[in-house]
Amino acid sequence: MPRRLAVLSNCLANQNAKVAEFEVCAGAMFPLVEILRAADYRILQMPCPEMTFLGCGRWWQSRPQYDTPGYRRHCRALAETVADLLEGAGAAEAEDVVLFGIDGSPSSGVGVTSFAEGWGGRPMHHPSKHVYGRGVWMEVLLEVFAARGLAEPRLIGVGTELVGYDQPQELERVRAFLNSPRHEAEPTPPPARKEAPKAHSRTPRSRSVLVLPEGGMNDAALCARMEAEGWGLLQLPPDGLETDARDRALSYLVDQVQDYLAHDHRVALAPGADCDLLGAALAARGLGPLPAWPV
Image (cartoon, rainbow, N blue to C red; front, top):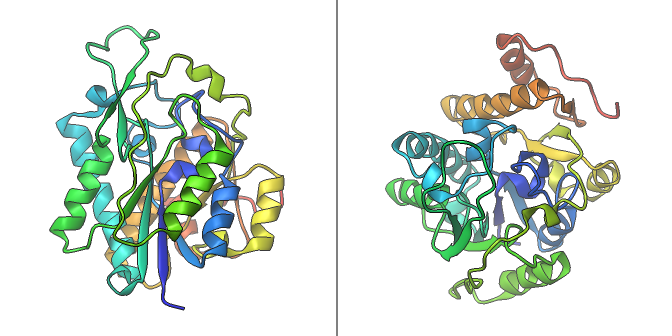
């Protein structure tokens, strides 16, 4: 069957990356992973721009706080890594490439982003309103794809940050989108005001992160075990990348591992993830070997 690629926002495979109280499940959104696996999509996970910029202890923010030259420069460097992944995976020859953003996100919004005018200074609750538009990361990512000569993938925003988020309904929307003609655009969800973000956190994050090889999310038996234990997932760079591209991707992964460990998360290695390159990158940061899963 011709190759299909699904490029996931980091938090769809690891809700531990979300800003506090915005998680919708303990670890990975395994029902979404199952839909993609059943439809024969090779699954690639992007790094999280917010997590790699401000860490997992960051405050809530809206698009204006992230729309800065420094953050855009960070996003541009990170987007080059994602472009490397797509080129290495053969995106130009793929039958379908679908990129999954997060509607309502200030960074990863596809059709809807968040906006809070005049928010800043002393930390305080300031409800953001949702407006039509792309998040900062999504804008920069598409700019880098165009500059690299990569065709724009099909885009869909999973509405985990929208008021009234309903996972079964959202998964049906994803199924319908994947089955739609390739030229059809993703319908934009209506903007909505997020009045009670805490309502999302009925299931607290697991604070457990599993580093796994690139094909791990396409392994049904492995996913069933990881879901039962509530693991969030960090995907190693795929084999076949050129050395510089691989090293950049691995560096961003180790950034995330280091921050999770500093914030008392459990981080372990899935079968097949114990490689010399990862061990050397961790050691260079003064980090010991990660324990093997099961732990």
